[in-house]
Length: 162
Image (cartoon, rainbow, N blue to C red; front, side, top):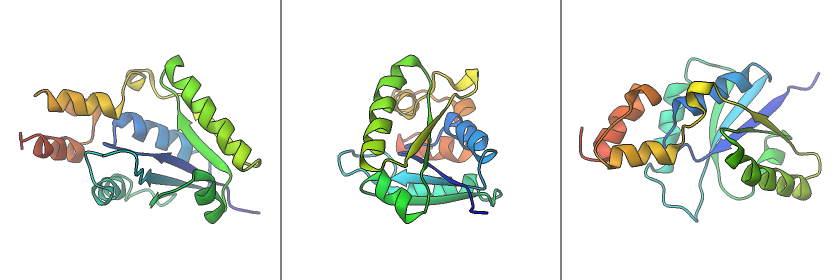
């Protein structure tokens, strides 16, 4: 029987406990889950791709069913390369749905076999976004209860508090 592989793509800039919640939920559904950090030339991330990769690898080191990777270009090309057709996306609120639906439909247009599974995070993370985390730290506060200790330390360093 063929291995069931899903891909959870994202910027993960930074990785939050909401992302981790989605990863843990998705990992239960598939033989292998690829958590793939996107190299997006249209954005300037706070953390370099190498830093994000290290955070992801450190976070999921004890979970052999979770593989960490990076990619650039079209997601559907990456899916073909990894012999997967399943995309995992988290939906926090109704406001996420429109853009996520557009991306899912474009992916399906480019690759008709592509399926997108939307997972809802735990209620305690339903408001959480990487952008919000960065803004809180940039403005001089912190929320260590919403990120891993490693991410908390790195955010403090990035914003001159560590």
